[in-house]
Image 1: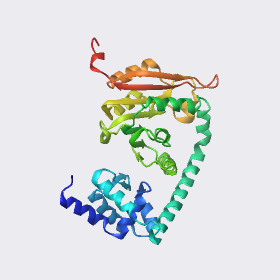
Image 2: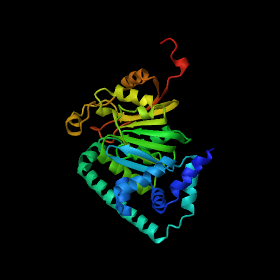
Image 3: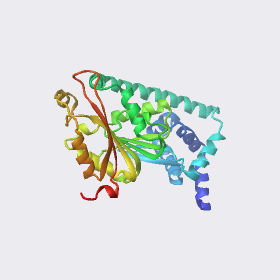
Image 4: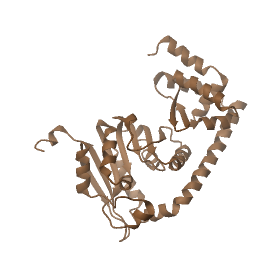
Length: 322
């Protein structure tokens, strides 16, 4: 329950036309200050002042990403209920709001075109790698199964890339966060999530070795085709393990050992696959057990075997005698 002064703060923050326009836009998903200035045609300082009032009241949340800041509706409890009520009773056919939404549609179309142009520049190397291993359908079916039947509260996708895992597991989580160190990849991911209308997921600029903000926050943590970029994959696993809740689960997808040296020179791979024995040692060092491992052989003789490992917190009775 909120104190009376907190409710007054919420109502004051929402009680202004420009701020209502901002809230109406945020119903459509996460947006940056730059997005708002382009859509509303107002100055950055003015937009920022309005957003600060909304953020201070708790109606929206803010995430800084370098010099940029992204905003989204706060859908938690009182703030979320008020925002939803306002949007239900707001006439989006009103001329001003209709223009805002039309500009947002155009802005997103332009962002998706830029994302597609970037992806086209890496498509050849991307397709070459994909041709070497099992079809995505079989592997992705196994990933969905490994995620469990019941939705989790928080899904963390570390090294999210284009956000495919957030898309694939939509419906398996109540909130999803994808982290990646590439702004270009995040642009692709944001465009894809917007196009699919996936509102429960967001992507963030971040490094796998700097995860203090996500300590013990994830019920399900994913490392999908990430470890082969590390000289020492145990470092990434250890940092990912710190993000797990006590009874959380980690899914790791990567290659089995191989000898395709061109992947080091052409695609910056540091490790040529991981063995079951290595994974067990790395998992144990991070306080985890390998609960299961499935292998997916390649479609061609010179291809790559992909493995799906499921890691879980070591249970007390499994450490006896160790």
